Length: 287
Ligand SMILES: C[S@@+](CC[C@H](N)C(=O)[O-])C[C@H]1O[C@@H](n2cnc3c(N)ncnc32)[C@H](O)[C@@H]1O
Image (cartoon, rainbow, N blue to C red; front, side):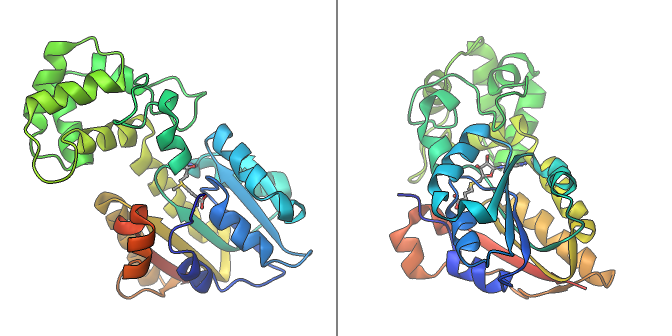
């Protein structure tokens, strides 16, 4: 069963109006989307978006009970405006984004996100996109790989890992890559030594930081004054982007920051739902 992260906090900060129009930019398994749609009146509407067609199908199945209040759109962050245009909506009462990958994507080994289940080096959220993790791993230069693993994975041993990858190329599977990294750098602490490299590759394949920047830049256009925006991040680089974008909106008089300090899950939620542990929530009200 999928448990949406910080659901109560997301709903509180969205301050839903039952007749409002909302957009969930990361429908995923439909956890947050269903919770929002169930609180809307027949006049309210939720646009449930995701760039992963298979996730949208899961979300559709998991929200069948409130289907009349949801429209699904396969769009990435940089194209959410198209979902509004198709629906003939000028502005939203609220927008939610719960970044990263879902449990479903992580556990489907053929999607290539998991270092624990062997699969192809894929990692595309949108499977119609051309570039996969294999393209990066097998064709980027050693320096480019090291820089990418250092910057996006915040991995201090990036040079050693990049060297080991270049020596072992061509690589085909997540299992091969995970094993190679395990041999190249010793395990410190609980995390598998390939964890940060896998995260860096996923962020690079899907241009996740560029996508997030595009979403944040479109907020003043998409969300009406008085409308709320809630973003959940799981990575310090993403949280920094959100914090800076919200601060810039506030300085320009376009938004009021609702979360002076970042909001974290309660200890109870962290215990009951370990994937929530690294979550950080920030929210604004547009002006
Ligand atoms: C953590 S999951 C969301 C889970 C969801 N909130 C739920 O409760 O079921 C993140 C989702 O965001 C999607 N996603 C990530 N980056 C995206 C982007 N740039 N554009 C659209 N969807 C994106 C992923 O495909 C994934 O399904």
